Length: 450
Image (cartoon, one colour):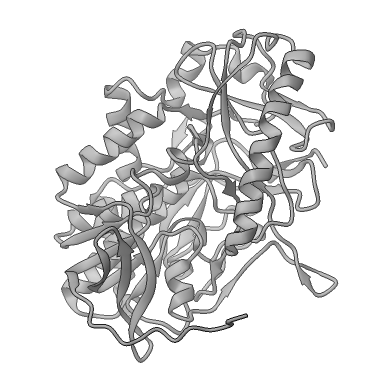
């Protein structure tokens, strides 16, 4: 068997030279690209699929867990996320939390969250709104493009190599924002990172994976959450869509999948899809109101809570979250608690924050150790438990602004004035925790379904 192939040297064309290169077009990438453009940067956004949105579109996570943004009647994530969701509302493709109970009154009565702030949206409208936003802010987007390597000078990331229908090309950038979810660019650059959700017997424990799907034909008062150990996920878990009788289901689960291994990802995709018709049949037989459930859509990719996370100047911990810590270098806020999916099977450990309270995310948690010219946003930052999309928008907005300011001022990202960055974000409508109330007692609500 041939074990290695030595690729011959090849002269590559340069596709672009930009101020800010955003890698990954999910929620973090959308916000990073727009934020950089708002600050005068020439921006290129690279995306491997045919649309923006990541898990929100291709992954069919068709609602923002908006209690990350709205909590106890307060809004703590604003800026580009608010601009984007307001546009989706105008397009008839989104219901914001203040209107949710009015339009879908039964939904909040049978959930487990203390503050049901779900923001359902149409993923097709999400795609259109994202395209429109890129055009509005003159962000160049390149779809169907994979990043295969980085261009390094010492410990500085100077660009990337890309592969698509046009062949292999190079892109050079003054600053790079890694919004890949899996910290792919950081890994190529040999930045240190963590993976998994801990260790057991010397082996890394992997976060479980799920594939979303949509069903229609459900009654309006169908129970949307209840524990049931017959299901691989461990519970009925349904989220409302724009149509009254259609819901998105998060009810599949496969364990032991390495999200950075292609063979494992393939196995996980197939195994999750195999569960879906079984779950739909179970719903018809066991869930009141779902007797006529019909499968309508299956996500184009599975989702996972945890993959690679950078090692950074500071790591936001569960203790920080549950004690509502506010940092001097705050660049984003979040009111979502800690959501730990059982790596061994069904169930979750949930630590919900008290409504009306939030914590902050520091700039240091976006800055990787050992490499320069690159910053992270989204679920690959140094933080335990970031996966929800509104928070990815918030960190993306911060990273994009930082990248643009750093490039324009020609100073390293880690030497950028945090005060200047914070003022820039405030000018963009971002809330940075200036009016947080006193700490609640008790600090959180713990729910275990394992």
